[in-house]
Image 1 (cartoon, each protein chain N blue to C red):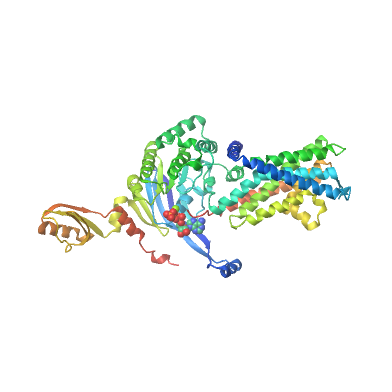
Image 2: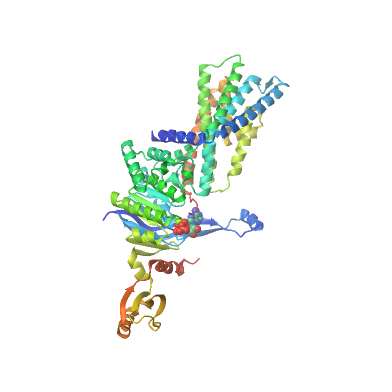
Amino acid sequence: MNALRVTWLFFKVGVLNELQYRVNFVVQLFQSAIALTVGLVVLALVYSHTDELNGWSQPELVCVLGIQILMGGAIKTYIQPNMTRLIDDVREGKLDYALTKPEDAQVLVSVREVRIWQVVDLVSGSIVLGVGLSEISTGVGALDALAFAGALLLGGVMIYCFWLVIATVSFWVVNMWTVVELFDGVFQTGRWPVGIYPGWLRYSVTFLVPIAFAVTVPAEAVTSRLDWQTLVLAVGFAAVLFTFTRWFWRYGLRNYTGASA
Amino acid sequence: MEHAVRVAELRKTFDVAEREPGLKESVKSLIRRRTREVKAVDAISFDIASGEVVGFLGPNGAGKTTTLKMLSGLLYPTDGEARVLGHIPSKRERDFLRRITLVMGNRNQLQWDLPALDSYELNRAIYRIPREDFAPTRDELIELLDVGDLVRKPVRQLSLGERMKVEIVGSLLHRPQVLFLDAPTIGLDVTMQKRIRSFVADYNQRYGATVLLTSHYMADVEALCQRVIVIHHGSILFDGRLAELARTFTAHKTIEVALADGVRDLSAYGEITQRDGDVVTIRVPKVETARVTARLLAEQEVLDLNVEDPPIEDVIELVFAQERPEQRQE
Ligand SMILES: Nc1ncnc2c1ncn2[C@@H]1O[C@H](COP(=O)(O)OP(=O)(O)OP(=O)(O)O)[C@@H](O)[C@H]1O
Ligand SMILES: [Mg+2]
């Protein structure tokens, strides 16, 4: 598949680019450390008052936190930088060159950027998840692990779709930046299992912004509470969302007018 | 003759939001957006034979870039038909995109922080250029444009002209058969302009490529294009040989005379536009050229006499100064 080859090359070029800005690594370390500390302190505070939250024990919630950091890292390594660049390019009319290339335009706009220093979050998220798991007495079965990997992947796909839809809207609406900033805030809701939220919010962060699928569902898998219906729902929703997104993107392209130059 | 480009009644209109400046007006426009239609390209038609180099001329805002973008599949035409190499550009088929290139003088497509060579590798993958073709083509282009050292420097460290040259190498690695060059020499010094010009001519010769080129520098057009298409307010005003352009658009000719007895007042013959030592330039209406020439020869002691079309710059200025045709007024 040529798309994969192109993706891989862009990845390499992206890494080369990032290596020129090593300072970013230190900044990233710092940011991640702060975010992680805050997360853990809040957890400790909550569990100093109670033993369980909506059926989740403290180590289980540490797992949720770990997955949220992990997923956040993946989003910020790949999805977000590409989509914010897309929004910028559309506004400044710089998408032109991506569209003259004999490669699927959706693939191209999705792989041009990579923020490799965000790997810090991928690593620290994995460690937090590991720590949480080690404190859960029951352990993780092979099936759970498989379901976890699948749920994580599906969640990633859905978040990607969400972002691409937002970015595509910028073909018509110039200022999508407020939405972009909003995402960071909304994504913090993923720190807690969505079950603790009131109905309207729960539905919003499940189907509007698929954070529940990206964080809570994988966490359910890894803590052996995922039922097969949820997994099927995740597969179905991901497929529908992906198909819609692709259609919407193509529709948006027809409306691309670029900037005058 | 086979046609590389066919354009029939092609149109593009943009809806542009319009509002008065000021806070009050912005609030108003939130509620009711007023839009205006801009006819950027208004039913143009032309054909370009394969291997031809055509100059696409027009003042700022004439619709040149918009046309090139439609021909390279970036913009969907509002109406009409375009075909390039038999393909409909807006379908953006791979086979089509692999055979064309679009170079825009005011944009760059190379990775900013990396040497151009890295970006070339990316293009190799995107265009699926076999390795055994890639290296020779790349090296040949690098040599033709003499950028051997430049392609190893991060692009951001290159000057405007240097960057243009490495950009051009990057956009020709896949050896496109049709080149859309949008102001490729914009902002470059005279030497660099010449360099790019001779390169384009060379590429056209070597590969028999078709070139549609816009430029605001007449020297580019005179050096490269046998044929020009003039577009203004989105409509085609002229399509033909460069020399024809002067004949169609100017009602005047210039007569250069050198007199044996030096300085004399010749204003009785026509408008004196220049006096350069003993040589006087007179501007006369085209229909009177023969009569004035005859009179001059009969009445003066003429050493040398030349009848010429006005310089191309003047012709173009005249063409561009044309009013928007009546039927297009909104
Ligand atoms: N994306 C756009 N949205 C709205 N109007 C546009 C857009 N692109 C171009 N236009 C308008 O269309 C007209 C033609 O623009 P175009 O860029 O094709 O001109 P041009 O001939 O390339 O001019 P120049 O020589 O200055 O590059 C202009 O009036 C311009 O304002
Ligand atoms: Mg232009």
